[in-house]
Image (cartoon, rainbow, N blue to C red; front, side, top):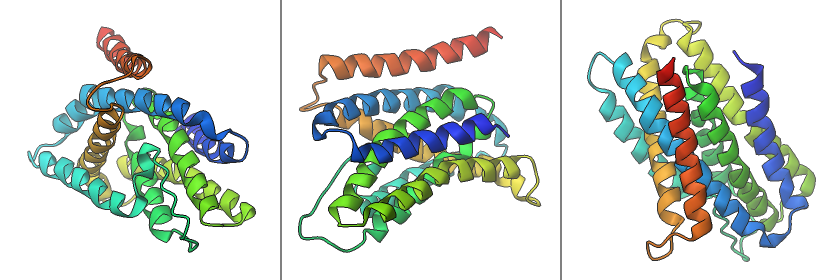
Length: 240
């Protein structure tokens, strides 16, 4: 188990959320660039590392069903989270009730995202997830404030959200090491679900980075950097 992964995941999500109290509202463009980079990086890592690994580990040839299930699960989660995983901020001025659906679905999403970090390529993937959580946490903080949640409560909820991916990582570590009875044998299938979620998240980010299917120069550069880093990690691993 890596404490570096636990600290990095939690810290990035927490700082991204707390930034809502100090960052100017015109920072939306920068957040979209971070999203474009993280989406491209996550997609590259998923295709180059996670998919080959999970298909190699699965002997029943059923892994595709779980990947499809994860993809559909993310679609269902977004009916409650309103796309905050992509950095979307949807504020309804008439709404003052606590957004339970957003909070619970986003926490489940973050927990699942932490699970594949026990794979051998974890340090490449953890950076992508950590960066991806910055705009997601920022959007969560924005929605909570817009719903008139008290500042102290917002901070506490951001701590809860920031702990989800580290908890997912810890749970997955115990699962893959066989410390949770016989559940370790189901690890490839759980990974399949997470891969489906990653495929949905990353492709949605990439499609939404364009207007009328046209990328801006800055977003194109951000996407190319993300893909290039994923490729660099792949070739470095292949060289060993």
